Image (cartoon, rainbow, N blue to C red):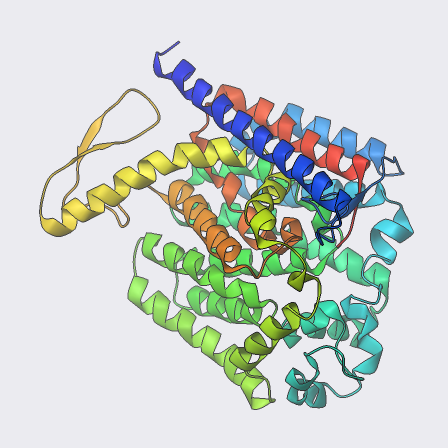
Length: 472
């Protein structure tokens, strides 16, 4: 066994211990604050859920799917032909997400999840004229008015509501169709993320991460919430940005423009988009221009029909503090949010991200040295220390590749969202579009350890779904 592996494993276990301590602290402090009525509005803080141990029809299938992916997933991911691997990954993700949802039962886990008063389907019957709805959308964002939008509709741009209005218009109305749409579309993340990595020249990372995307604990909230769709749209847009060709970046820009009008927080996905563009092998400037054109086209359509994103955003900030956000203490949620994120991204996120940070910092130093015409020693690879000279020919962002920079940038976007104070609680689903990029760094973990980490991912999701009654 090479000398560096025990040290690396010790670091991984240290990070895991820090994760466990953070989670324990968030649960304990949350329980104390709830006991003193501190206004957390989350009974099972740091998650927006209630404590209710239970089993359901999906319990056995979920365990079987998890066992199958843990046992066979890494091997199949290494050797299956690429198209078959993507198809198998998507089907396995659907099975996992669907099984987790059915732990709560067909009605409570799927059909009724999107029909409560705070959700989008509550508003669908009230939308009789789409252009009129768009023209008057911002006037109904603020609360305490006779025609105010319900919580989720008011808290998002009109694109989110239009998804479910569109389903209704084509004959797929109601909670069951909406929930199944969230599951089927949300599961495409396990296709889009690997496609992005492969297009950026890192097929080993694409294959390594796929089983972790299948068993992502965040699937608890993908089935069923609109945030699963949001994550899928962003991931598909980034996959198209990474693809070579004249039209792919433009189509990616269109999808990212749609994402911008699904959730205000997805403006932060622009950081991931810029990272993908920089990591492209060629045509970066043209890809940036065509992608920007795609975003502009979508924005222009919404403006043409009366909705301007910035107007909506400023009103949503006011609406945010008309509700529970005014009570929820920033001093708790600013760190407890990170514990909730760990339950969504899974315990592998911390150790994998920690391993990615070292080459990211080394790559940044190499980039600085390249710009100044200097020479620096940069550690590369996961094996014994080697050196490389950073100069004008160094790849964009230094020696590090997409399996380093995408999870690091995703973590930075989460940090920005957390510091803003506009994400106090419920981030286990709200941050799904960023959480799905954190496991990308698993390729930096020793191959022999990945099955254990995969087991931890599955155990996390099963524990959350069977001990808690989650709320979308």
